[in-house]
Length: 119
Image (cartoon, rainbow, N blue to C red; front, top):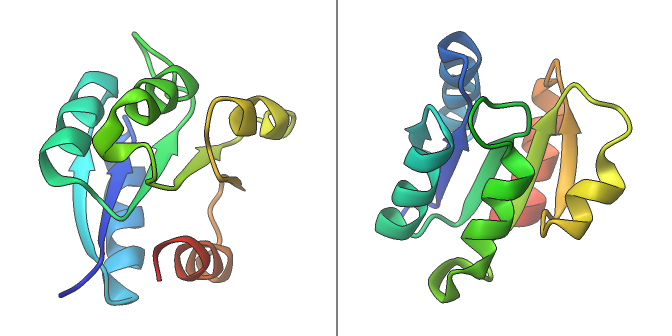
């Protein structure tokens, strides 16, 4: 069975690109366009890995990561923060993220992160 990656990203073009790159690596992908959809889909699908956009409207990705980690069923799931903010790594790790990948996401970096955390 393929490992499942939840991609949380409010920009459709970025979400589609990430989905394409991840599926080409042999993983299944589900998408969430916003914070509350991310929380619902994490609980419903129990992904093996979550890629979490940090800069979202309504609720930022770090807050969403904390909420997902608070759920017993997803407390073990690695979350990779996806951001253009270069100074956010310490804050992301404190919120429960396992690592950070910076935008624009490079395919080699993405592959390495996914293989490290979802394999």
